[in-house]
Every structure is written in structure tokens, then in C-alpha cells.
Length: 179
Image (cartoon, rainbow, N blue to C red; front, side, top):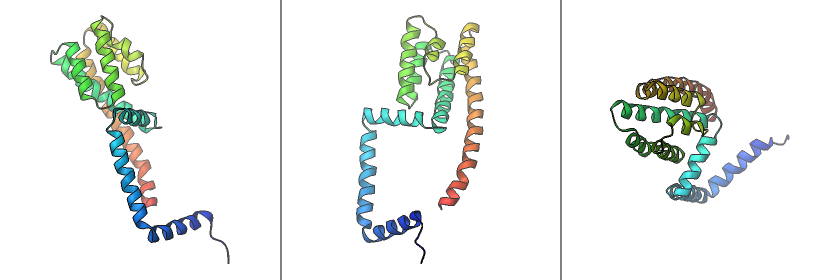
């Protein structure tokens, strides 16, 4: 005759409600998915989603590192292939998915067209790791920014792989417990 713990009682109540009103839960879930899908197709919704992802603990840093690695690989490959820097920055802006990074690349393109350095633009944002903009600054000083960006992308990819493996090893037990 002992009362159920509150979490168990809530789970039993939820189960009872779902078995009786499953169609409401199914309709509400479908409406939520469709609403989110429509909202994410708007510029404001997409910007809010990108901001949310970048601000998440651990995942935001991982998203920044993956996007920075992609940006470095694309820009380095284009520069290495003798594409003019302004064109390379424009093409990289179109290839990066996160709208904050697109804005960053557009600002970089404007700044470089005015004679400023790429590293000075990267220094002004929190999207780029300080080690990355210092490396870009060094590449600008030596005139070897293309190879440096490609090497930097390789380094970031290795770092991202290690981080992803450790994150996966942490998440696996949680998934097993949930299942």
C-alpha cells in the first residue's frame, strides 16, 4: 500500500492518456513537425535555428569546428587552385550552410576588397577559433595561405573526429538506457 514514486505515477498517467487519446498525440506531433518545417524555411526561422545550434553546449563548439574546417578546406582549395581571393570568398560563402558563416564570408569579401586582411575579419568574430585566425594571419604574412588553410582543415578534421568519437562514447550508454 505504498504510493508510487512521482515519476512512475506520471509515466503511468501518460501511458493511460496516450492509449486513450493517441490520435490527439499523433496529430499534435504531426502539426509540430510540419510547423517547424515551415518555420525553418523562413529566413528568420533558419537564422534562429542556426543561432540555437551554435549556442548549444558542446554541440555548438562542434558545429563551429566542423564549419570552420569546411570553410578552411574550401577556401584553401580555391586559393590553391589560383582562383582570385574575392571569387574564392564568394564561392565559399555560397557553399557554407550556416547563415552566420555566410555573413562572415560576405564581410570578409567586402573587407578584402577594401584592402584589409582576412585574418582581421576572422579576429572580429567568435565563430572562428583564435588559433585559426592566428594561423591565417601567419599564412598571409608568408604568402602561403592556400596550403596553410588546407593543412589547417586537415588538423581541424582530425580534432573533430576525436571529439565526435568521445561524444559518441558518452551518448551510447544514454541511448541504451532510454531504449
